[in-house]
Length: 257
Image (cartoon, rainbow, N blue to C red; front, side, top):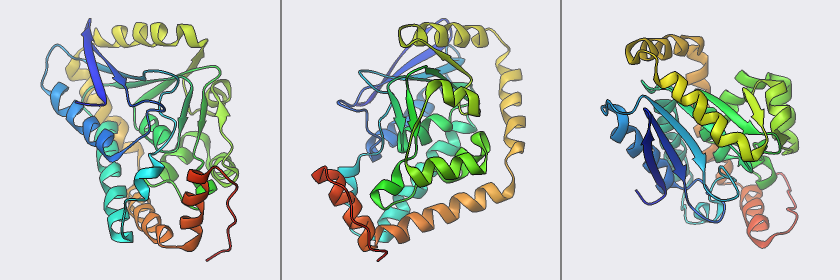
């Protein structure tokens, strides 16, 4: 794998995202998440996955420049649906997956983290879904997962304003479990992962299966509608303006077209 690597330590696959400079979530990285799950699914030496980012960030968002290579709304919908499929597999995976978030988990990066079974964060990390700043909406399940963690009103505020929250606020709102100073985050996350790795793999698998029943049929309907909305918005002039403004590092001017 080009962007993901892992080493096994006392039953934990310590997995690093390494796609400098910001570990942006590209289509290639999404496919490597799927490859990672294939690699460890039947590996008895791996009982837990701990996912973290190398460098300054966990993942500072989707690869916006890659969006400029998408030629149609249909292709955009396919990309959204594929990301949703991989992240749904992650959330349903038979082995616990923990995200250790430092620096930033924004946009697609937060959608990846929200698909893990739980999240530890550095107290100064930034977590958010800023897609509306680009004239887009989250497209990898974020519109459905964020309200499950922080409630509808806080999710609306975060998406509408594009303002991130810090690690301590993420714990307060239920988006993360615990916050640590950045220099302690990985060590503390690994400590918990190793503790979980001592549990019965059979019991863990069934517990994960039971947790999925907390998601209603409406969740899956919402994810499908998200992909459709993601594709529709991509064809608008506002989306083109938002993407161009991001690349040109200027304030977008939206016209509702």
